[in-house]
Length: 463
Image (cartoon, rainbow, N blue to C red):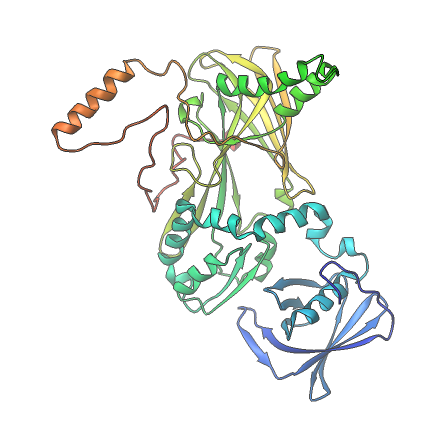
């Protein structure tokens, strides 16, 4: 028995017959069942002739090669774009695995698909294994902001789904497929790509989310900087079980600073207004996402040490009836995405209004992720800092508390807290307030009529 990933040796003249059901997809992706009971494959060099059979007689034949566009759909089905677009459903998993192996054996396996060409096999295996666990799906399903916003965006735009054919990309647990059905979708196909799947989109079709906006801003956080710096102090030891580790201290220091910090933070750590870079999923190309370069100029509002750049994103669901936003901003309720901060090994000291000029470039790699190249310098100064970080190797810093930047309070926090509580008690209302920098979660404010991150944002294209 062949397992997924096995390569089938292709020999000319080999003939294999499978029991299948076949549907043809129209331009609108509406399926029409074809009256066939079987499918035969005949190998011809680096091509495979696929013949559809009815009672042993050939109904039609099609040629498959390594360039044939295709994608798996569920456990037993494949969508093939031949002279016609066909959905082939196998009778059992064994037949589907054999067919998958045949496809991988066509020509160069490395050039079989764009995904295989750009992705390390070990990375893909780890990725699908990770998201194959129900515990990880539960983590996303329990993200109230994410799940509720998706459902609200779909149901509030039900006319975009009523009697429509829907492609759920990166389906995972399939929860979004069920939301589409709740909104009246006629058929839902679940696959594992996004912009690449746009080739199946009809002319006036919708994509949810429609746009993604990446925000970035400089931050100051001495506590975080010292925490990461101190992690390397372990390597200062000169007699660790009789071994001198100090020669590796510099390498360890650099390695720790190449880890993006995944956590949440108080927005007051941001020292300037954010700029943004927007991707339109309806029109931007896959190629444009391989390298994203963002020039920036920030104007700090106070004298401070700048320790790096903070990143978060908003996505918009632009339906016919309503536009809904999902935000991961530090000013909004926490999601399972948190925020990301990229440190530099040396801070910059900036004066109020002194321009911080630089560039951040996101370069896609074969680990289904990006390398982040960051450069910053101060206007009127030769001081320049840079770093290259690996998004695939983050430091997950879930402390459960959001530290308030030192020096923020201009009145006594103790007097202010109890004064506020006294006022609330007199009116019959009490609140939990804030404890050690952690504010209890507030009710989710959805739907958003505008992006929560749109406060006086600078667009990088304006510089």
